[in-house]
Length: 255
Image 1 (cartoon, rainbow, N blue to C red):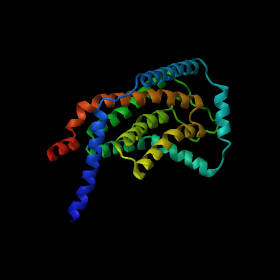
Image 2: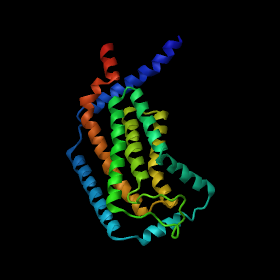
Image 3: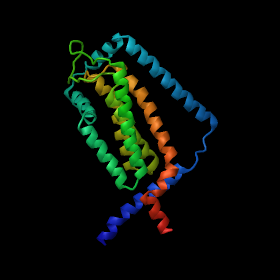
Image 4: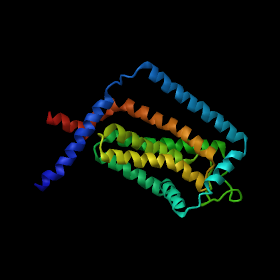
């Protein structure tokens, strides 16, 4: 009897994953105007990021950045400072690599091999783009003479690596949970947790004095483009690679 209790949850997970995989592999019946709107939004995001990057490269600092940071740091409640530190903690090394690796292994263990591969690609892509842009722009971090800096970091400021990591990797995990899991309390909990991390990390980076608001805005713009690219690659590869996953094989054998 104990053996059956251990097998049933796995079969449920496999059935749900297989159904979701088949749904994902089907050609989406999307109206053309929605596709056009989506493409226009992406172009606007890219243009906005390009303009912001030009301004950041040509202007050492923005007065509005200083105002935003100082206004946010007026919140001196210890509980809020602790929350901001906890939100940022997963984005530092080595825990960022460890946490991402654990999630990738967990996804792989569920038999979602293509999803695990794409989660790794999401991590590498967002990190590589962030490092490349930082090296090109070379914007200094906020100075302790101007704002309260909780930790002195030596790399460049624009765009925020934390935000791009959270949006690129945790955002993709959010997408997987939204598309692969059936509506439930577990699914809702996962979406809230990862959604909150993505939203609050930008505030935490400003509050901790380690990034300007323009750094955070730029990273949300660039991170969105990185996440969309990851999802498009995932959707392209889904019908080509998911059939070799254990969940698909188990389903076929059962039939």
